[in-house]
Length: 114
Image (cartoon, rainbow, N blue to C red; front, side, top):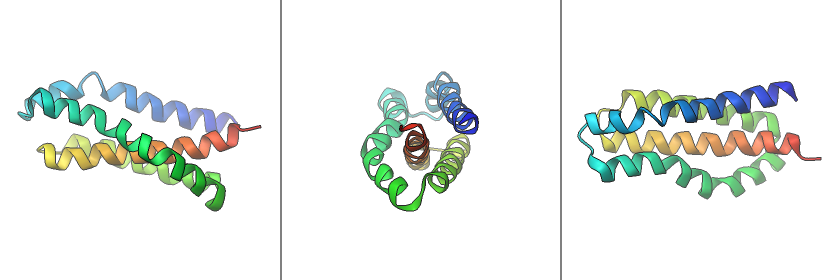
């Protein structure tokens, strides 16, 4: 349980650590306020769409693989966000962050279920 909690904390810390600097980064790329809004909302949108399907996958494929793939996907999304030169490459990276977060959360939530 400690490993699950630590992994969940690391993932959520990563989400929280990037949010304060992301608007300035996006504005530096010339995105404007609408682009910044899209970049900030994309992970939440992906998580909302993928939470239920990720839960079904956790039940079918197992919790641990989903947590590992989710954490890796979210980490890749964060790295690609930092490398993105424009909105059209940053938006898929942010969606990947949300998709990875949904997968990791579904896997870890299945462990915490009584």
